[in-house]
Image (cartoon, rainbow, N blue to C red; front, top):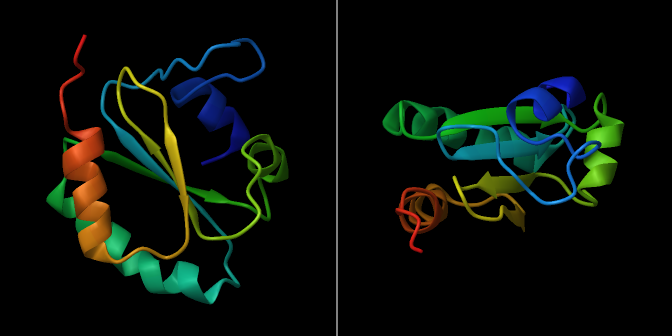
Amino acid sequence: MTTQDFKDKIFNYETEKEWSYKGDLPAIIDFYADWCGPCKMVAPVLEQLSEEYSGQVVFYKVDTEKEEELSAVFGIQSIPTFLFVPVGRDPMMQPGALPKKTFQQIIDQALLVEETK
């Protein structure tokens, strides 16, 4: 995902002041780098999850080496870092290579819950 993709599909931080997610499905954005060992370890887990939650959650990857502006906007200091984006609520950031069970908990308890008003 490029910085422009992010602005088009997720949130345009240049024109909007308040967070407003553009997508219809919750998203997980993986900030990674090709040289990062933990990033490589978590990649197959994300592929499994993208299949298991197909049609429910959208998965994106942002190469922090290529997309320095986007990484700076989110203050990415360690990788991998994940941005969990629910629909209708503020996103949550979580650094570190998480186990599959933790991803599943976050997806089930934070992303796939209906918005309560």
